[in-house]
Image (cartoon, rainbow, N blue to C red; front, side, top):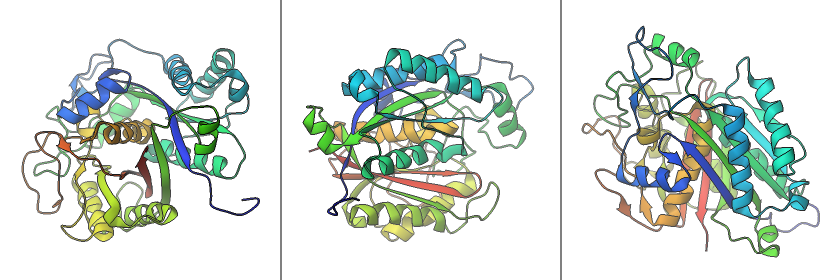
Length: 371
């Protein structure tokens, strides 16, 4: 960084969320804290040929481009971005890659240019379930390098028949209408709708314009374990390395972390590998409280990491830790300090949000409570 000195801190100054629990961060964090799942029988398309029948989806058939533009506008308004600042703000998208992606990006670009004044789409990430956490890290790099005064990161996935069929055919989806992370008898994830936008800027920028940070993105880490096309490394080494990198970037010791919003898909192999990763980072039995909020809002693929980042921010603000819903009993390969039954009162300074993806990608986001 020019002039030397410490890198600037990254503040979250705006959030907007749309998911099966409703619109806004309020309904989402309420559901996460009470462990109230949004899974219902799928009505958006025909699931009679499939073994799984549930998802966490909005009513009707919302359009992804329209909802992305709407959430970006809401996040910008929440942050108080004026058009002068917006004109220099980076926009990073994370989307599921399909035949509509190019048209979706173009529609979002044109819409937010008119509504918000954002000049262009800086990048579009389609790298599976770490796409939006990678976009957050990319945005933080842009800001710390002084290449933009602010950045909007937006991500969206709406449950659709093609991906649902692929996951179901592979036997990857839970068939009992619930998700059971880190639990005995866990059977896999269920998909969920999510359209999310976050505004990031340096704390200096926020202070100059009187914007109050919701939280700080204190550190981030990204790794690829290259173990298998869809299975995680059994020892969790890739995810452990990502978490360690996030902590090291912020000069934070593992013992300072007071909560982990885990990737926790409810899959047999993935949850066991993540448990080993957490034991590597925090020591066996000595880690912080853990829950997976996918147990209430579902797995939103490319949008999951940004949705879970928003939950983590709101949990720190609420002073209560989300419930690991769907728990069926202790699993010997997932011995963690799980938050069960009711939200746990706590006001940690730091929390980790973890995500993994097919291909061995792993990300860790270290969230710091705002002062």
